[in-house]
Amino acid sequence: MFKRILIANRGEIALRIIRACHALEIEAVAVYSEADADSPHLAQADRTVCIGGAKSAESYLNMQAILQAAEQTECKAIHPGYGFLSENALFAELVSQQKFAWIGPPPRAIRLMGDKATARRTMKAAGIPVVPGSEGVIADPAQALALAREMGFPVLLKATAGGGGKGMRVVRDEASFRERFEQASLEAGKAFGNPGLYLERFVEGGRHIEFQFMADSFGDVVHLGERECSVQRNHQKLIEESPSTVITPELRAEMGAKVCAGMRAIGYVGAGTMEFLRDPDGRLYFMEVNTRLQVEHPVTELVTGYDLVQEQIRIAANHELSIQQDAVRLSGHALECRVNAEDPYQGFRPSPGEVTAFDPPGEVPVAGVRVRVDSHVKAGYRIPVYYDSMICKLIVHGPDRATAIRGMLAALDRFKVEGIKTTIPVHREILVHPDFASGRYDTTLIARMLG
Image 1 (cartoon, rainbow, N blue to C red):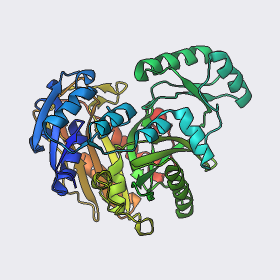
Image 2 (image 1 turned 135 degrees about the vertical axis):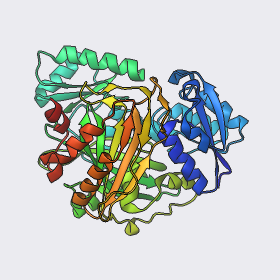
Image 3 (image 1 turned 135 degrees about the horizontal axis):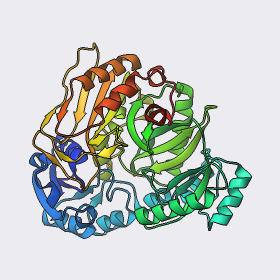
Image 4 (image 1 turned 30 degrees about the vertical axis):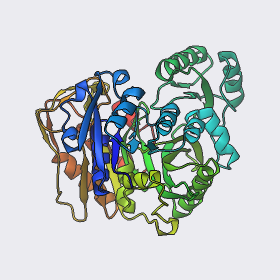
């Protein structure tokens, strides 16, 4: 096992990894930007290193600064968390070249799955159904329009190097096609350095389902069931749950086996998530593979009992998987609310500033409900303007979905945050909405609620 690990990230996920390291009796080195010098999570690390200025490009995306920090502190491995450099194949290669262990999948797997068009072809060859669309990157708007006419509107333009909803446009008619193509391509080029787009049929009323999997370097791959992530605004998730209300045990076993086979075929190692779109007829179509730990991994941890971050570290240390497929059971129901520093009634406008009060819930008066809070925030902390707006993940587990929802509502009622706007009010609205409460919702829920 490693003696010391460098965490190439910040905030909530950095603290999560620190705790996993300490549980394994591993020292944790936290890097930070000048804007994060007072971040509360740094106090939990064994060592800290400033790696640059406030902007991400000057710090958390500065590969050489991170590698230098790892060398100076004599770390044996680097954990990228999620976001920033977590899905950067070049960084993964540089980490390995510098003789550090990379706590993530091999660079080849990152490249294969990072290019969405290539990922579609690869998974289609592995027998996983994909949304009908272009076979690869579309050369120009004329070619794309011809294919869109053939498929029928509406269609979805997606950045081949994309994620987080950037470089993505729904096109409902020919009149707006060229304009939307140019918008998506320009946005993709700015966000990812690659303007390439591919085309898919747009599934109206779809649901976002993802399967968590883990793989070791000995060829063993297991899945840990699915998460439902259909509560989204602008393709950004707000609430996740496990299990999904629309996945039967038979379908879970069938698709889970396909996920494992697909990942085994490309030599995947580490944690990952395969995302699917479920159409109104119940068919699941491959969307993409996230070659990293997901923000919403805690709901899987609570329904399975496995610590995914510790498992990541063991795998990177060349241990065999400690999880056996026939032992995986989904017990009860878990929900996660992403609490963001945003004003949900002003277009989810960011709300940085000083948090004057931060009092998360502990126990709630709902029998059988357990509450987990993943956050680095404390009262007096000033949220920087430079980074993602998520400040906390509030997760609950109950014996069934209805009880978990009651527990989450009780937890939200007891969550005190002052000094900034947060998404807590809209979380309450979602949880009591008839469509969500009944489990009959889709990715249009937020748009229908807020207009």
